[in-house]
Image (cartoon, rainbow, N blue to C red):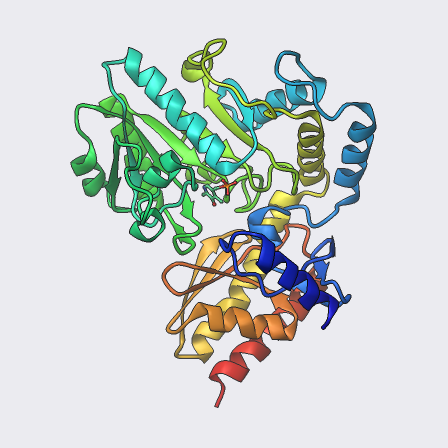
Length: 398
Ligand SMILES: *Cc1c(COP(=O)(O)O)cnc(C)c1O
């Protein structure tokens, strides 16, 4: 058996079958990853929206190495400098004037947002209800699963945390219907990622902010997939000209070192009090140092601009496939978060892309999803587009 197959077999025999990998990734550099036998692939998954600055960016590697020799953990009994600087930086990039809370994942960041909303709501009219959206995705803990308005991932886990109501995305009337006198917050992804790379319309986000103001509700943006430059803004809500009361980050925050964050406005900055929420590893100095290197790299390499530029080129290339094939229906998304909606099984397209040497993802609603690193070079994009065209030609060509 091959080295890849050996590892896959060991993995399948000894890890719970929540995932079904068909490839081993052994190393990565920039947009390229290699399997255990040194075959290379263009990684247009970025580890599911994690490597916005690419695999093993030298700035991030240096920051991790330097911090690892100094201090890897101290607990929240003590402050550490990378976490303090990172919180300051995130609050400043957001312009919300509030504070940050650190944790280790997207689900945990959303869990913190939900707890903060409830704590604020308890003191503001005894309210606890949260409205989320059908086809949304907020995580896999019992509470964030309740926030995730999708039957297929909730199945088998009843009873879920009560207090959630679901509305239709991009439909403000359905939000109004979902709100009652116990509602305290609305939680939304500016672009639904797992749900199909579906952007909120500008009118919807404006109306949602106005509705939250009118009803004294908190607006929570889940930026776990859209954040850190993915859509061409630091945070996708900035592209809508609205401000949430708080937003969450994780995936791309520390380029592969597990880290989550909740960032609030001034109103919510001191709602959590000592002991009211915590996470042992939250604000871990290695993760915080990696995140600071990610932010510096996005700034130094002008990656917000690049996400727009390179994203525009990829979007054009995908739109050309819509003109060419009846099975290619529509291109959706923003910056380097793009989806090709197809008439067919997106897993088949992903498999065909893989055989060409390109890794992509699926999303719900028959979507092939592309999340390449924001550091993607034009010549690599051209190569990748050739692979996409070859794969689609093989599947759908005459
Ligand atoms: C991935 C994702 C999450 C969950 O993040 P985990 O780190 O897997 O817990 C939450 N919200 C959105 C929008 C995501 O894309």
